[in-house]
Image 1 (cartoon, helix red, strand yellow):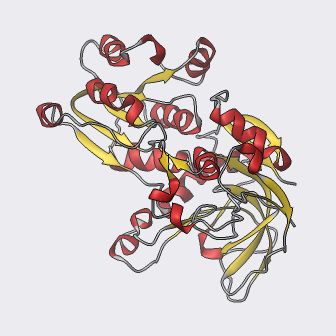
Image 2: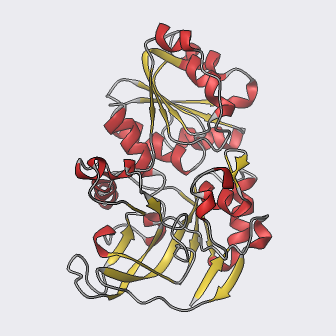
Length: 355
């Protein structure tokens, strides 16, 4: 089979389309033929050897990377074969993976919060030789989620990384409620679009940040009630003006250090900051006086648990969530897809088609 692999850390050009052995499912596993796979910032930074502007090898998962590495966190496809003991799926089923593996027996896994498992391994990151940038991948059948016929493979490949942590963070952790104000940083990316949709779905007022007139217009078209150009300087002042001096009840922080100070300043009294991304820098200063003075709650979110992911796929099947696919490109053009993401030319999801 063909797989797009990373032979060493480097620029987009290091990506290499290789012919490798087609995997065989073992006990409890299923072989999935990939139709589409989402492109994510994690793919790009893993290929480049950095994370949040720091060396990827400084992180535990960076030290686990074995070359050549097959990236790809969120593929969507069809079950082609199953191993012994599989009862969860059948050949011909359309599926997406719950794209992380957990131990299943720690206190977090037993309580249903498997995304907090200390042994968590993410598809295409800590799974040596297994990733979505390939014609096939093998995955535990219990970690596959049915993909409704009403959701295309391209849309299915846009749900896992973006909608999962956004829903888990905003709804299940921050308890975003109807009538509240939600501020979304990095709103033009896949997670940003997901946050706008989730916010509007629950009846919140959404303020979104963008970096060009074209992107601001796009954010408004996608449902943002207010779109602010972060290039104009201190966006917290604009947030305060848009909220009558109150600030945002919930801040969806998708950037990290580059926006952190202003995100804190934008939070309302008793505001909740949900940190989902830090690709714009992982180290930021925290004014503790501002934190306790405003009674602010800060929550960090790593991915989403299995139950949340299954719920989101069902909501997409019912048409209540609709991923914004900005561009589809063949797997062979993965390097160009990475370049587009690095240059921030996209507005929404970039998806690679495999078959």
